[in-house]
Structure formats: structure tokens, C-alpha cells
Length: 559
Image (tube, rainbow, N blue to C red; front, top):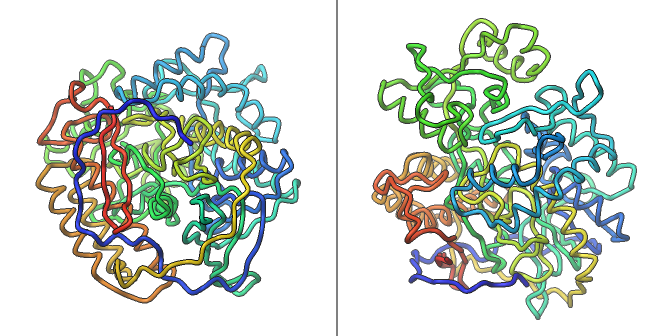
């Protein structure tokens, strides 16, 4: 179990009961067994599966779509590590702590940055082809919040795609079984409360298909993010918060859910743009692109010592403030001074995406607008990925390891997934989990009604979250969001993939709002307009969220 430090607890804020404690689904029609089941196929899931396999575990990997459909393949900037002889883990530590706005777990950050260089080199040994300079050394870029060039990248701006390719090849070579197009539903537990596997629904006509169960002594959540809670996001369609919702229903603790990072520079596609937005990597600013308003003024100069390379929360706020000041619908990213050669060599993917949408960065500024990007919070873990439910582990964006605090430092996300996945493999080998017989599933639908299973419900959740719990938040707006989400909990519908995703989105959205209402200050990526100042005297601590037996979300402040 996770060791606990002395805490200062404040009274909880109960919400109207109605959060589902289980998903309504048919009884499993098939069963598979494994020592470890890994849910997710991004860097965290693939590395966890490979390292557990190397330790002699029978591993089954389950992924919601195809193996390469998660967030990792979309990662452009790279993976941070102190690989330059002039750099050091201590400097990486300092930059991470600064970005985290006083809420990072320093022990977790120190562990991660210390293990980072060797972990990245192991990625190279697995076949990842990072970009190199003329002397053959790794080519390192710089991104916001970093005082040094320490970001390893591949294919210019296709780092995630290359890492995913190499890891999938290693997975195939190792002979690890994978089930694609499988939506995880709920955690199976034994009579002692230990994880005993998962239920899932496999889409398509193959075998297996429909609702089934995987029985395993260890369950690793690596399901990625929750960006689809909002109207516009850089996350793929599969990022519907499934892992966080499952963990809350299983009784696990979540933490720091109020800290949802909005990337400053996704491509603006016009009023009303929805779903996944093209990302303009922070590495573009790292190479010297400037943020300007429609008069050409570099508005970040003077707002922060690093100007455009300030931490992401600072840049996102700067953009939103300048839009308010000028009445503009978006701002601009100017990289015309790069010239065609640099764009084509360093940022071929971004260049192609922009041109696809009618923008040529070589000759004109890029229209940009912040969009939901990364969840700094998630399922609470210790330094080895253990959650508060025995046998359940979490890594990657679904987890809250403490390394991000109130705001993730650029290119620390792939690193976090990599380092903690390797640690989870070590923990599972040490813990040697051996669960009992899974308890029968329950159907709580009558006691705790679920969200309407339709696109209309999903649309309402996203609109409520974007309007009232997005970049800018107020007490009144968050109270409105809470009421509207609570009202949605009474709308019933038939089970199915769209409905299960809607339930997960509703659960996660409700938990974000509950935490955001409690934190009455502005810190990192949590911006309360009615509480504009950071308040270390009262709020330097974390909010832990739990789902009670009667479907009520509760948050407690731990100092």
C-alpha cells in the first residue's frame, strides 16, 4: 500500500449522489487468464508489458483501438532527460519543480530525472531511432520551462510515432498477446478487495468479441488521458478518461484532478471547432518562433523571463489575457524567419498539417488557440505505480505520480510513462500478487442511474466543461457545471460503447469539477478568476478524490 504522511484534512464537499459504481453490461461471455493484464498501448503500456514479460510474467495487453492509436503516437516534441554532459538531473529537477508550482512530490521528481538518462538509452536499445547531430550524438531540443536543451526527438517532430513503432516491434518480437478494439469496463476484485482482473468489451466480429473477462493477479492501467471531456483537445478520440473512471468505481484514490493542462498552441480551426485539434509543438517555440497578436506585438515579452518558453500554464494564460485585451478570437505563432529548410527538416509533420488546413508557416503566421492537452492528476500512486487498491497499478497520463504537480513540464509525459512503467514491472515481480476468486459483478443501475448513452449526452458534458471548467474558472461557473452534470446523471439509456464512454466522461468531469470547486486559489493550470492569487498558506497540498459506496464524490485536502 502507499505510505501515508501526516495530513491536514478539511471537511469534504459532498455532491448529489448519482455517479455509477459499476457499468451496466452483459455477463462476460468468455474468459482469458494472465499473470498481468496491461490496459493501454502507449509508451507506458507497451513498456510495462515488455518489462513484465522479461521478468517471466504471462502478459496480456488490451488496447481500446489499434495498438498505435493512443496519445503516444501524437507526441511531437520529444522526451526530456539530462543527456547532455553539460546538463544534470538536478537542473532537470529544478525546472520540473518550478513548472509544478509548489505541488510536485520532490522524491518522485528526483527519482524520475535521475533514472531518465538510462531509461532513454534503453529505448534506443529497443530500436528507437532518435535524431542525431553530425557527430552522431543525440540531437537535443529545448521546450518551454527548460533552461537547457534536453529533449530527445525523432523524425524532427514525430517522436511519439517513432517510439510507438519501436515498442510495437519489440512487443511482436517478444510474442506478447494483444487484444485490440477492446474497451475496459470495470475492475474485478476478490473477497479481500484485491484486483483480480477486468471486464472488457471487444468490438468486431473476431474472437474474442463482446463482453468478456480477463483474470489476472496484477492489473496495470495505462489508458492515457481524458481530453475528450472538453469540446476541443489535442487528445485522440479514445481519450475518454476510462482508466480514471474505472479506478474511482473500484474504490481507488485519485489526486490533483483539477490540474488539466491546456496546450497554448494547437492550430485554430475557426469558431466552433470540436474534437481533436492539430498540435503545434512547443518545440517550435523552442527553436525560436514568436507568439504575436494581430498587430505583430510579442505579448509574452515582459510577462515572464522566458517569454514564449515560459511554462505552459503561463503561456496559455498570456494568450487568453491578450485575447481579452484585444478582442481577438485567437493569437498567432510566427515562425516565418525559420525559412523553408528548417520547417521541412525539423517540423515536417506540423508543416504538412498546417498546409492541409490552408496555412503555410513558411510565409504566414499560424493561428493558435489553447485546447485541453494533458491531465497532471489521475489515479494516485506511489513511486512504484501502486494504487490504493492492492494489485492495481497505474502509469502514464492516467496516473498521478506526483511528478507534475500543478502543471506538467514539457516532454516530461513520455518520460513519466517510461520510468514508472519500468518501476511497475519491478513492483509486480516483488509483490507477486495472487488474487482469490473474483466476486460476482453487480448491477447498480437502478440505485445509481447512468448518463444517457448518446452523442447528445457527450456533447452536453463537453460543452458544460468547456464553458465552466476550462482555462478560466469561477466559483459561480463551477457551481453551474456541478448542477448540470448532476442533472445528467438521471438520464438513462441502453448499454453500449457510446454509453459506457459517456458514463466515464460524466464520472471524470464530475470529479474534475468537484476538485476545482474546492481549490480556492489560482495555481499552475488551475486558474480561478475569482481567486487570482496563489495561496501557499492555505492551499499548498493536494486534493484527493474518492467515490463512496453510495455514488458520492468526496474530496479531501492533504497538506
